[in-house]
Length: 314
Ligand code: KG4
Ligand code: ZN
Figure 1 (cartoon, protein in one colour):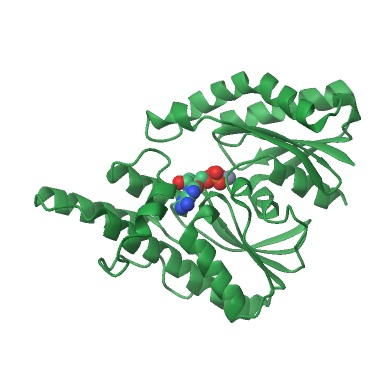
Figure 2 (cartoon, protein in one colour):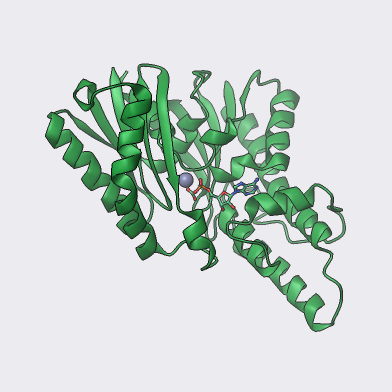
């Protein structure tokens, strides 16, 4: 079974081809450089740049996979959630290819895709407890099969990645600043500031807007009082508050849902502290199948959509 998958929900246009369990290619055309000047993704620009990426991304994917387009059995694409203009491009490309080769088209969910980015190496044993952390989403899901997902908690306002990127912007880092905060946090003191714990109320939901405001106000106050900004300490204290709450909520979910697999997915799963938290939780709760996705499958990519499509069809 050969599936060609398209991911275009935000500022990456990506095409991947999977042959049964094997990813043959995963070409990603990223627009980060073009959005950098604006300090964030400009939706209209993202959709226009996707249009420019279609032909060479598709040709590169076919070349690397050594396949002819007519050898593809299914087309899969990210239907939602995401930026509407960006999503439409992926949908139109999917529809066009499916029409051209007369093969079925499958519409998939981006967040379910992120979760299957952690299953590229086929390690999932069900049920799976998955923590999805990205620029647009923060949610805990139980996965009972590739066709049975249950959201048990989600953010009520900002996503964790959005919070990272806004704090990074105020600190003067380039967009997207999540990875740089992670790096600076490594050499900072996490106890230097006592930032608010997002929605520390025993529920499975999250709220990152309070933490974001708390950190940004702290930076502004230091600036107003002409004090030096201890960047590393702010990064470390912020990162501790942002990730410690995830540890608490996942511990509770592990006790309640007793998963066979624990995993993390989405762009923020590239975060070093979060990766450690997941490893420790797995060890502490004796979950042998604790999966930390490879970096290349953390941020948006079409291989995760291809893998999800394959597992659903199987
Ligand atoms: O999954 P993704 O590529 O896009 C969405 O679906 O939103 O996630 C992008 C997010 C950005 O907010 C970026 O700052 C964040 O992932 N990110 C990180 C790290 N690497 C990427 N956040 C914290 N630590 C990192 N190492
Ligand atoms: Zn994503």
